[in-house]
Image (cartoon, rainbow, N blue to C red):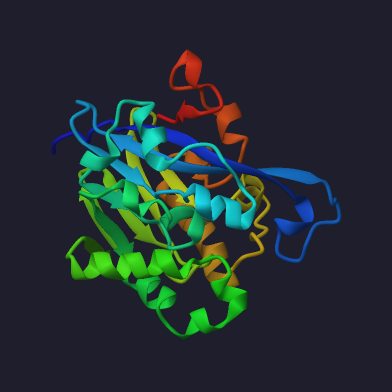
Length: 263
Ligand SMILES: [Zn+2]
């Protein structure tokens, strides 16, 4: 059996905000302290550096202004910092269609977008008539993805899907109906890009869901799935935790706090 590639993985920070702990956990938190939230996209690069995948696309400066987030760089600008040309990428994983993951689609004119069937049905169906669910989506982002469908630029997955040997997608739901996570074979073992299956390490370790949620039972099962797919619990990477940059080194001396290498 051929050995699997050891992919490199980068976390690229593109925005930030200061929230409060009480806003982070379902049911609030007795310690109402400020809590930073970082916004990332991720890049997976094959060992030869010949093929790369982006995971999520961030949001635009206009989205940031509308929602009062601090926008630092576009997905394309972030990828350029590690020598990747967003316009040339062939495959982009959309973990889910929330505004902070699906808003940078225009940076990837040549890409196919990998999306779960459930997520598209969720984002275009009756749940979006409910502001309590729809508030984290932008209709323009969802409509853009519908256009990509008609351009045959969406690769739909239903459950588990494969992008390449040692690089797979797994629908977990919970946070949104069709949230998918990404399992990557690395030199250190199996790493899982959990996206918003866990915004913070605390969501994972304390089994306390983030407050934006579609299904609590699925959310908790998603934590177990992420842990089961990773070689070690430390190999599960939360989607918005500033601690990620404390636990993993910068990709280069001048990229500290901007791009860190996870594997
Ligand atoms: Zn998010």
